[in-house]
Image (cartoon, rainbow, N blue to C red; front, side):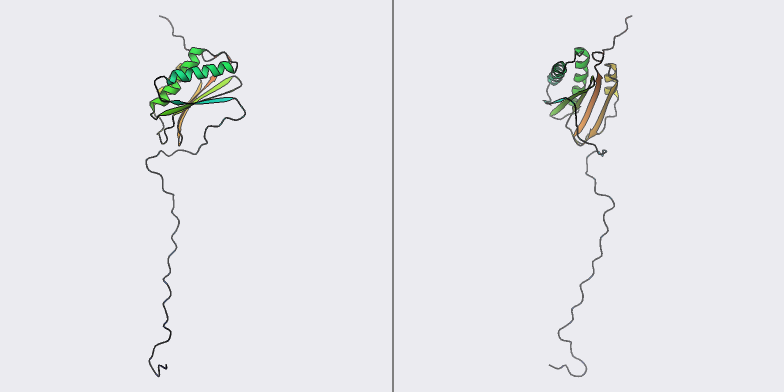
Length: 178
């Protein structure tokens, strides 16, 4: 088939090139999860090269007493002579504070190193805002604890106290008589 002079079509017809798709630039910041507290990256609880124990505990009325007994029994098993009232009061305060945050369980972690014992309680309520109240810290200091703290993260809120057992245990403060 000849198109002749002047005016036929080209065979086969030319198809236009596909339109060019612009390259999308990467997002400047990844989307943040909604409803969670932004925290710094931190590791999970780790104890290396030292003795340690941990117990998962249900959130019940008797949990502080169970935690107190377990810590005191383990400290005696490790050869310490803890002041039962002082250590028991610290453990009970840590557990009661963690339980007050909500959730169905808490976990109690214990480790020692050179006559010092770390008691850490985790409440397993992820996404909690850091506590703005320093009442918990004041209560621990009133019980004779010199090093303590609280942190919030993806695994929940951590409450901890470091007890120096070189002199037996932290002593309960003696109130001055009138």
